Image (cartoon, rainbow, N blue to C red):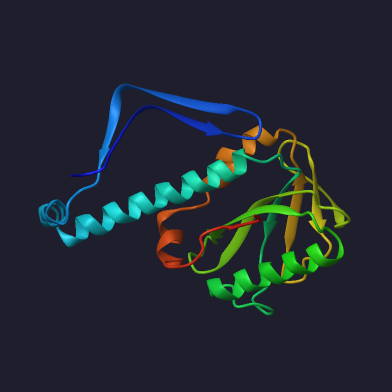
Length: 204
């Protein structure tokens, strides 16, 4: 027979809250047979299947980022850009490598308990990448006042040790609100250009 899973409640634990989703009708999940899977594939054209697969992947990635963001307390919202003279910012592997070096260096010297969640965004030119993200437990990392403020009047800082381009950082006033904010940077275009790659970077 087929394995059945029946439930009407889903519980998700976050850092500050618990989300309980109750369904009016029980959800029944049945593992499909190979024959059923083949029949399902025949119904749709390759293009429809491709778009469906992309939407499923996009929603799954957004959900994972949201849950990670919601499950932690955050101190800083950061943006990391790349100087084309120093890094090929059109190459996703190259920019990710720089971020990993930056994270590893700071964890070894200044912030051994650094918690981070970083997501890529396409630049307006639709070619270059930059990253937005969240930091917590930054230890002795240096944040230097830029002399500028954001639209809410919060001081904008620069991360002293970010040597690959330009950086900004603002102190988070309400950690609960940033969860939905960081997910907006993951778009279909970004998903296409990061196919088979890690689409966000997060501490364990």
